[in-house]
Image (cartoon, rainbow, N blue to C red; front, side, top):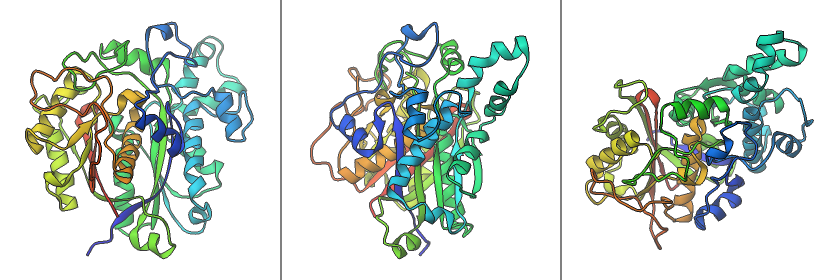
Length: 403
C-alpha cells in the first residue's frame, strides 16, 4: 500500500483572526470578517467591503517581535510570517532544521502593497537606499526567501503562482515530493496582501461587489477581495507516527487540470472543474457519495458560480453533499484561498460541522442545487473536497479524509 500523506500542523491568519480558536468561533457563529477598509490606502476605500486582516503592518511586526516602521518587510511577508508563527506553535522547529524538508509558498502579487506606495517616488526621483530594498519584493519568491531566512531554515524551496489555485498547488507539489521520497516533510501554503493594484484590477473586470458577496445566489454581483496567509505541515504517515504526532487529516486525493478555455473565464459547462474533482476522487479511491462536504471555490462571480455549480451537479447529481463557499467569511484571498479553504475543510471534518454559505437567498435559475445556508446538525463527515479554480482555467481539487 502506498505511503499516505498526512497533515500534522496548521497555521493561519485572515480577516477572522489568527489561529484555530479565533476562526472556529467566527465560523460557528456565522460572523463574517468582511467589512469596511481600515488599512488599505485607496481613494476608493469607502466604496468597498474587503476581508482585511484587522492589524496594521506595525501591529503585525510587533506581534512577530520585529522592528516597527520601515523594517524591509512587505505586508505580504508579514502575513506569511504570522501564519508560520501560528504553525510553529504546534510544531517543534527542530523538525525543520534537523533534516531536509520542502517549503512550498504561493502568492500572486508579491510585495505590490508596498511598491505601489513608493512608485511615484521611484519614477520621479529614482531609487535610493530606502526604496532599493523593496524593488525585489515584486518577485513572488522574495517573500518565500524572507520566511525561510527569518526562521533560519534552509529548505528545498519553490514559489507557485497559478492565480487563485496557487496555494492548493503548493499542497499538491509538497505531497508529490514526499511521495517521491525527496523529503519526509513539506510546509505548504501561501498568502497575499490587499493592494490598490489588486482591487482596481478586479474592479476593471467588473466582478467586484461593493456589498457583501453572495456565492451561488441568483442575484450575485461579484466577489469581495480579502487577504490572508496559511500553511500546513505535510509529512508521510510513517514519519508522523514515528514521532507521535497528532494527525489532523489525510490528504487522500488531489488533481489539477487546465481548461485552456479563456485567460480569465472558466469553461461555461464546468467540464474542467468536473474533471478535476473526478480525478481527485479517483486518486482517493472514493465515490461521489463518500464526500460529506464540499468547500466550493464559489467566488460569487457570474462565470465561476455557474461553471462550478454545473460541475458539482454533473458529478454529484441533483442531491449533492452539503456544499458552500466560505469566501463571504474572509473575502477572496487570491493565492491564499486554496490553503485557507483547505484548512476550513479539514476543520469541518475534524469538528463534524458543515460551514454555511453566508448571504445566500435565491437559487440560481440554471441549477437544481443550492448551497447550505445555515449550519446543519449532526452531519457525519469522513471525507471533504476543497476546490480552487484560478484564472486561465487552472483547476485544483483536494480530498481530505479522517485519519
